[in-house]
Length: 295
Ligand SMILES: NC(=O)c1ccc[n+]([C@@H]2O[C@H](COP(=O)([O-])OP(=O)(O)OC[C@H]3O[C@@H](n4cnc5c(N)ncnc54)[C@H](OP(=O)(O)O)[C@@H]3O)[C@@H](O)[C@H]2O)c1
Image (cartoon, rainbow, N blue to C red; front, top):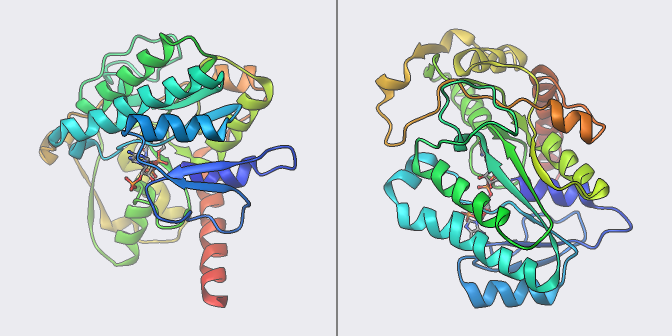
């Protein structure tokens, strides 16, 4: 999903873009770019392919993001999130490319968020451990790197895995009731703001760690009710539940959230509020529906 947004955002006369994914063909048809189907966990193929592309900047967004699945399929998670990152780092080292890596608030334990870039990571589930291990490989490599941490990422895309926002909208539109946790706190991030933050990082050549997300610290239950309100759907279908009652395979950081003041200050930008981000999502969803109807 973020990869699709990046192609659109980074599409400029001065940039030549290449994308990598596991699908046979690129899902993005309206932005000129080169596309390769590559499994980044396969060392030789991926290192050779990236070296052949010879990018100046690599934005590494590929990951296994299903948190409970990561807990249950640890080897696959490690290969996807850590081994693939090692391969990308190897390629970046060989060709002297800058590497921008997308990490997560799940590197934190959720005991005292919102977190700044200087907060001490302490993951409480396997997904978080895999993202922190990938961060540490990058920090130890002899390359120019930027690590971006983001949280509850969502956006409009083609054939993308359902984000929390997309899933909840589907539930509400189908008139189905949903139980949403009221003891997990944080902000959220629309992929468009993350992609434009990445664009700023590339332009300004900023190294180090940056948090990127929207403004609006709230419980997931409050976020769900805000989504219902902004899309004029029935908030009565949303009931509160505790994280413990869900009994999910992976533990969740409860008091999480990312403080984005450093990114706003150093990248000379400002991120949307959650309300503004949801309105942007609504507009883009409508544009996509209109396009699908007219095709
Ligand atoms: N989603 C969130 O709430 C969230 C929050 C914080 C941080 N992040 C991070 O943000 C980044 C982007 O997330 P996203 O929501 O855009 O994820 P996404 O839509 O799931 O995109 C990840 C892409 O990586 C691909 N991929 C997986 N294994 C691969 C492999 N071995 N080789 C090549 N490609 C592979 C996936 O293909 P398949 O779909 O076929 O597996 C998918 O297209 C990730 O690094 C994630 O950890 C996400």
